[in-house]
Amino acid sequence: MSLAQLTLHEASDKLRKRELTSVELTEAVYQRIADTDDKVHAYLTLAREAALEQANRADEKLKQARDPAPLLGIPIALKDNFLTKGLRTTCASKILGDFIPPYDATTVDKVRSAGAVIIGKTNLDEFAMGSSVENSAFFATCNPWNLERIPGGSSGGSAAAVAADECIAALGTDTGGSIRQPAACCGIVGLKPTYGRVSRYGIIAFASSMDQVGPMTKDVRDAALLLEAIAGQDPADSTSINSSVPRYSAALNGDIKGLRLGIPKEYFVSGMQIEVGEAVRSAIRELEKHGAVIEEISLPHTEYAVAVYYIVATAEASSNLARYDGMRFGRRANGKDLIETYMISRDEGFGAEVKRRIMLGTYALSAGYYDAYYLKAQRVRTLIRKDFDAAFGRCDVIVTPTAPTTAFRLGEKTQDPLQMYLSDIYTISINLAGLPAISLPCGFDGEGMPIGLQIIGKHFDEATILRVADTYERATEWHKTKPRIQDR
Image (cartoon, rainbow, N blue to C red; front, top):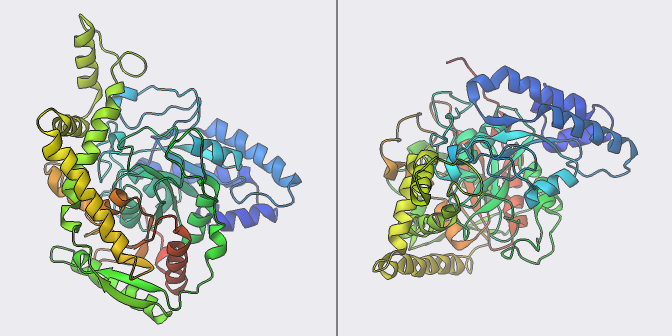
């Protein structure tokens, strides 16, 4: 087995035992990138020289540390909407094409402090707006399981890098499913923590009331370890919660006897790919074998989630993206006056999907329409959250498909934005309610594409969803299957 194929906890164990060095592991990952990324296109920016310096420092610390942190010496990738001091951060947009941030995001600072080696920055849909990475201003990323399929989005570059062993683990962001949906498409584990569990400071904002940072990993234990490293209150983020961070990896004991699993009837409907439904139902039966109790529940306002999300998210995006005006940073056009400079800079700098969402959000917030759209959407958002509150009165976690289909073909939905938006129909509600959720592989369809199982938890109860996910993962082999990256 190649060193690049190691999980985070496997690599950490070998580093502790001096069976390999961080430099060797980092070199192996860069060799894997050299062998495969001309096909996958997961990375926008690589940082080889800086990474090898970090790996050398990690090796020195490993020689001295009695109980090294799990991330010490581990090569990880970052979605390119994390600010990284001295390392280009583009958000996959022309308007930030050459932007070099002067400081690190809090999560970046945390993984650096834990000794992780930052390999590079991964591709995404521009400003994290999309479900396929086809909205990147630079190029599309391909799914390692089939290079003619999308990797999911918006964190598709991170998902593809993990699936292709082009990093040991990665970080992504999730506003409406952008960690979980690409995790499902690429057959990896993706965890969206509770809103407020992880700092958003230094993350390029899309929709501030829903954006959340989370791990994208090769197995559930890795997700638990990475979450331990990045979670916690941050004084720089007023939305982060002052709550102790559990040792999530300690919760992975395989015991789910008596745990109540809620199965929402609204998530198993016509239109879902048949193989997806079959795989998820099979996963539910497996959990039942381990002592879980199945409870049918209802989330009656699910049908309104997509509409609500695309009002609230676009309104917040319209506000957040107003700062990209060609004046302080990023792309600047040469207009004859201030207004023309604004207009040309934004027109040249933003792609079609970003412009679409800015216009939708500006319209929803405009005089005469605020009450009819934005205010009404916020009220329905409250009803969606109350649906989950009621459901969790009857169950401990909720189990659903992550996405209604497996990864679709590149170009298949680019001309139909509404069909693209429906890719996140099973994930959006969780962001609206601020809940934690994890996606992990639970099978493959007839064409060999991965299927994702989603487990949703109560606020700040990541430990339970990790425990359920780990129990299922121990009983199956789906996460151990690797894609064979073929030529086009």
